[in-house]
Amino acid sequence: MENSAFSNISHGVQQPLNTPPESPTKAAPPRSRFGHAHKKTESWSSLNHIVEHGIAIPTSPGSHNTIEVPATRSPDAHASQYMNQLSAPPSMKERRLSRNSFGAALPIPRSKRQSRLSSVTFADVQDALASATGARPDMAQMQPTREILASRVQDVNAEKVRGAKNMAFVFDIDGVLVHGDRLIPEGQKVLSMLNGNNELGIKIPHIFLTNGSGKPELARTEQLAKILQNPVSTDQFIQSHTPMRALAEYYSTVLVVGGEEYRCREVAEQYGFKDIIVPNDIVAWDPSIAPYRVFTDAERASSRPRDFTQVEIEAIMVFSDSRDYATDMQIIMDLLRSKKGRLGTTAEDPVSERIPIYFSQGDMLCPTEHPIPRMSQGAFRIGLEAMYKALTGVDLERVVYGKPELATYKYADEVIASWMDVLHGEERVPENVYMIGDNPASDIVGGNMYGWNTCLVRTGVFQGGENDEENPANFGVFANVWEAVTTACRKQLGPDFKFEWDDRVNPVLHGKASAIV
Ligand code: G3P
Ligand code: MG
Image 1 (tube, rainbow, N blue to C red):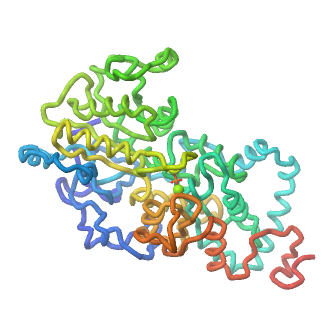
Image 2 (cartoon, helix red, strand yellow):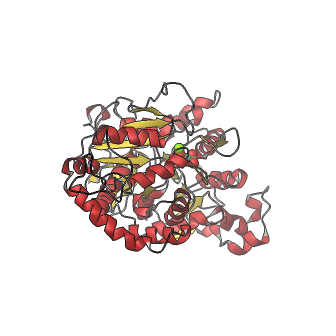
Image 3 (cartoon, rainbow, N blue to C red):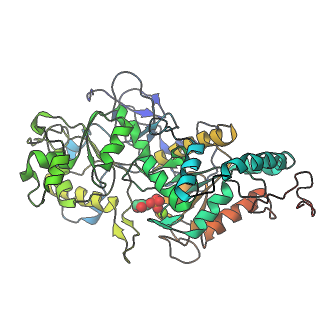
């Protein structure tokens, strides 16, 4: 990849070199390319989240099949706000102006469907679910009858059908639908209702948007489908690193960090990265690089060592939580301080030869089985930023994907439109999008800024009073996901909307007292 050519790019439109992005104060309200003007509660710009300086991302001649979304979080390290004494000497501050190869634009894939990741269809997932859950084999035969009946019911309820196709739900996963591998029962009930168990027998569009990470999309959706007892397609699923597949068009040789065993190498392979290195490959090559690591024979046998003094690693991708902070931080720090990603070297200038680092999400804490939330990728990153500043005297610039970053929400819009096409043959974003989340600092603030309706549930991170004080949900706070979704449906489809399908329904009389025959 050619790292010397840089351009400032916004929404895929190339601008002249060294031209800063459009001033955020003059920016139009967020609008998806599907023409959906988002209702505004707070704007990205009013919160001063659009990054004003024109840090360039690397680009090579020729076009990318990506959309480059301006960063809403500053690329500057957060660590300085937690530190007192580590101000950089003036000479360093000057050099810091020569920002290098990354920053203010976050590429997301132009194509919404994840067909490269999986050829699984909605029907395939239903079949897989039926075999996984032991559903009756005759269910498959029963389905067409219900579909015919449902389509007749829908024919005589055109207005409600329009309403159902003009709304969509975006579900956070952890703390809304599940706790790790444990089902939140209302989650299963909600999905069954949205998948057709409602008075119209209609599929109400919904996608999943999680800051979770660490395994391929198909593995994660299969696991979710099993827990939730409902089909979950990769085409309606976004985890924190899903949009990062766009980066495979910019970087070939990358260090991928985090996750269990080699699952994130698999993820990176599926995203199309050509040459993927994981910390184990480096430890196997030179165990002295991580002096506190106990490296097992099995790890050695499964790793891919080579002479890394001969390899230029172009970028670091932290896809998921580190399983070994000491080793991963040491190797990342070695690379950040190296000459253009070549291990065994130390750059004289800590900025100009530094390779970029990307994180898939920025959550500081994650609720787990442990009574006190555990540190997540955000805490790992802050640690790295502090170490980097302490060792070099300069701030670490980095890019963070995931909620509440704008790029992630824009990508969600694309996925909603594409999923609408799968469900109803209409590729568009419905007007009434509801984000259901448990974390005000990611789900809710992001949804508010993107102009969605936001619902905060009490089954996860949020345990506060009436509403969150800093990032209040604009549609309300609910005991659980069922309460949130049914309240939204009643608003859009009428207060008498029924959240159950009845096979005895007579479409001709539907809606009247004698509808059940
Ligand atoms: O913070 C990490 C992750 O578990 C959060 O997942 O689904 O709540 O965005 P989610
Ligand atoms: Mg959550």
